[in-house]
Image 1 (cartoon, rainbow, N blue to C red):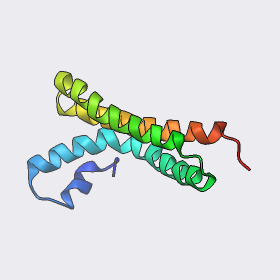
Image 2 (image 1 turned 45 degrees about the horizontal axis):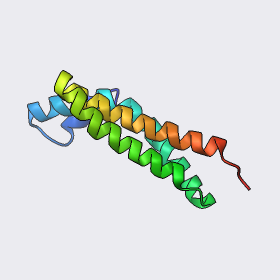
Image 3 (image 1 turned 180 degrees about the vertical axis):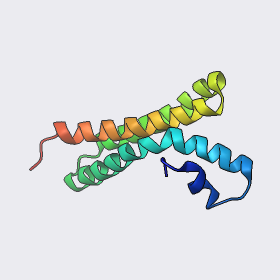
Image 4 (image 1 turned 90 degrees about the horizontal axis):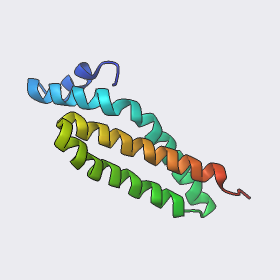
Length: 107
């Protein structure tokens, strides 16, 4: 998906402008999906352990960075700035959730 964003986006639409925008988004946001997978795995680990405070904080940080950062970076850098903010939010979600699991006491 990140390696061949044009081919991936073309599988869903033939509109050249949509493919161009989707390709830009996948190039910028795509590498952050690994952090999202890590965050989701650690979220469910925390849920199983009954320790949900930090995963909720991580989710709020993801939302805050994507929306707030998207507004700030989007005003300065346009659509690419919004994509960067989404990638930062996804990465923060994974990092905060993983850090919560790492520092928690597991029984």
